[in-house]
Image (cartoon, rainbow, N blue to C red):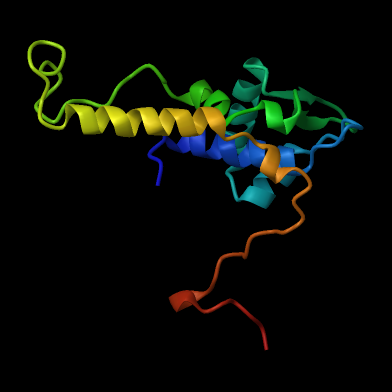
Length: 154
């Protein structure tokens, strides 16, 4: 599992929904629809969508026919683009020996392994785009009741 912050995760969830609804006609989706579909808190989602818009990932309009859409085709928006809105991407993982060890003498015994893992995550985020969500019709299974049994009514 990738370790990224909650806002970045929610940003990916919102953008993936917009990719799912993306079309050439410019269809817009309400923040309420996104929040409900991805089970995101509405006040937080409004801030996330504003931040994504500020960085050119989404566009939004107000009014009766307003809503949000991706600013460019889903295949042209990477996970890195989204995560970078909410996270500093230039920070490397801290050395297990402490913040002032690596880079100030010989590297720690895990330096190379940690560097490879960090680089792998960065490459994944840069390579993976929102294209696979385009036109996706399937909706994920909703939350289940107690003890993992699905919540059904008889």
